[in-house]
Image (cartoon, rainbow, N blue to C red; front, top):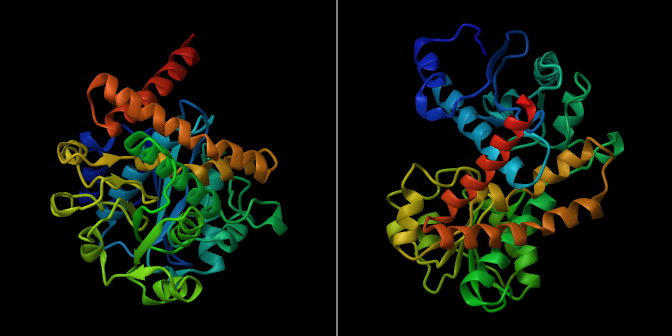
Length: 366
């Protein structure tokens, strides 16, 4: 089912493209008084209510925003399945520059749209939205997580997102180098914002050598002020060509691995926090052909969604951290299945996630 409000023909075309993944529901939201334009995409509720964050971003077009919501929500279905959560996948995007458009009125209007779905979609933070924003959204709906501890929430989910990515790196090291330690390994991080700066801390504590870049000079400056031993490079193009790079960690927006970057990537492992790192189908095979081990993004970055899901049942940090630590074992399981079936790890992860969702659907039909 798809609810449409004033959708143009090109947006409709995006919604119904066969390669977008068969979504259950897509809602286009508009509130003229606050300037809200948003898309809520529910990919699957086979495992339970759809769970996924709200991205606030200045998309170039409505079609681009819809496409991002569809891709991200599909990824959340797979992420939640691989994380062992009783949740399906959903995602929302708000169109606009959060620096200029964001207001309490807009967030409350958005919260009312979330509430109108009656719990089919549970939201949280993503790029451009923060704990304080979820506190405002939660004034209009009970289906908002990632709230502040003062308001009954779990707080910043980027803490466990970074921890999970670190566990994915450790698993990659175990698989490739027969030891989970990253001591002495050179790790390049593209994006040192909400998640990336926590990841820097984990890596330095483990003895890794860290190289960073970010489109925001202030983000890099903060890292260098706290950790003068970290090296900075001008941009991602320079980072992926860094000599002696062992691990590349894309931790910004998606599409980091494409036809231009994969051929020149020097790292032996790709493991990062960004969603939808593979720019298009086939990139996973290109990585494998070059002998680069890819830790599927939606598996290793699931620490955050583990945290916000736990918030719905009364948050306990130690319980969540223990669940996020299992990303290490899950990642190793994926690598093992990939080897057994002769497929890239991304394909193996998809098959495991699809199997869990399919089994849930069959159980529901009985």
